[in-house]
Image (cartoon, rainbow, N blue to C red; front, side, top):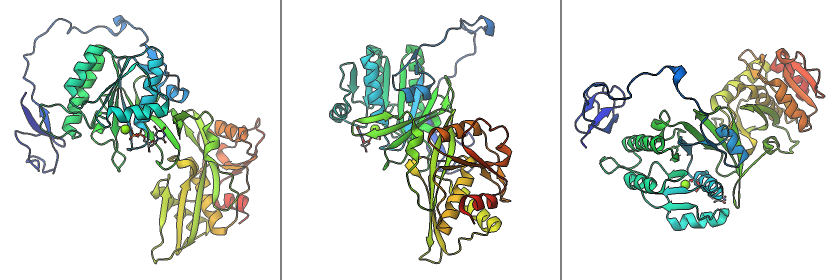
Length: 445
Ligand code: TYD
Ligand code: MG
C-alpha cells in the first residue's frame, strides 16, 4: 500500500518526508500514513440508522481478575473485547503486573498470548518463576511484526492478548522505525479493529518519556477504551495504578501496590503507608482524595542555609510552582522568610500530590522546619491556601476526617468554612481562616 506524509499540526500532505511543513512552517511535524483508496459513496447493507431504543442492550462480559486493587481501578475487571493501554516509566513494573494478571486469568481456565518484543522467552520464564506465575495457559510469542502477531492470535483465539510493548511492534509496509508516531498509530488502529472483531481483550504496554507523556502511545489514548497509568518512584516500593480514561468505569479510583521480592501485591489499607512515625520538625500529615478513597499522606520539608548565592528549591511529589507560591505566602502573609535558605519538600512513600487541599499541610511543614518546632503528633491538616494567606475549604472533609480518626489521629486543623456539622467525630476540630492562625495553633508562633 502506498504511503504519504501528513502534518500533525495543520493536516497538509506531502509525498515525501520533509523537515518543515510548507503550509504552517512547523518543524518535524510530518508523520507517515497509509493512503487508502477512495471508496465510492454508496449505501451497503447495514448502513441504516437504528433508533437508540431498538439497540439490543446487554451488560458486557466482565472478567474479574482477582486482585482487588486492580479490579476496582478497572470498574470490576476487564471487559471482553476491550483495548487497554498500560503506560508507565520503564522499570516501574508493567511487565510484572501483566505477567501476574496473565497467570491469574490462566488459572481460571483462560488462555493468554503474551507477545513480547522487549524480552526473550527465557527472560520471561525467569520472571514467571520468580512470580510463581508459570502456567501452561500462557503462550509466549517473541515477535515484533504486528501482522505475524495478529495471525498467531487469530489461530489461538486467546482470552487475553498482551503486547509488550507497543513501541517495539511494527507494520512492515511503513518505512518509519518501530516506536515512531506513525507506527504506533497504525499498529494501535489495527489492534483496535482486531480486538473488536474477534472479541479478544487486548492490553498494550507503553513506555513513557521523561516528560510524563506516553511517547507515541499518547496518540492512542483517544482510540483505546481504557488508559491505565502506573506511577511511583522506581526506588521506592509503592506503585499507584490510575485510570486516566475508562469507557467502562470511573476514572477516579486508584490501586496501590507494593513491589516485593515476588512481584506486585495489592495494598488494602494504603493510608498507613504514607505516614512515617517521625516526631521531628518539618513534617505534617494531610489528606488527598483518590477517587472515593481518602488517603493520608505525610509531607516533609527541610530548610537549611544555602551554600551558594542562589538558594535551591527542590520538590519531590509536589508541583514546583505550588511550592514557590506557598513560600511567597509564608513570607508575605506570615512573616516567615526563606532568604538565603535551601528548601526541600518531599511526600513520604513516593506518591505524587496534586490537590490544593494539601497546601496548608505543606505550608505548616515548611514553617515547622524553619522554626525547628515539630507539629504535635496525631494532628492532621487540611486546607487550600490562597495568595492572600486565607485558608479555603476543601471537598470530602467528612471522609478525610473519618480516615484520620481510624488511624488514631486526635486533632484536625481544617478551614473554617468546612466546620459546619462535624458533631459525630471524636477528633478535636480546630477551624482556621488564615495561614497565620494555623501556624500559631500548630507551632505556637
Ligand atoms: P518490569 O515489570 O520489568 O518493568 P517495566 O515492564 O515497567 O519496564 O519491572 C522491573 C522492576 O521490578 C525491576 O527493577 C525489578 C523489579 N521487580 C521486583 O522488585 N520484584 C519482582 O518480583 C519482579 C519481577 C521485578
Ligand atoms: Mg517491561
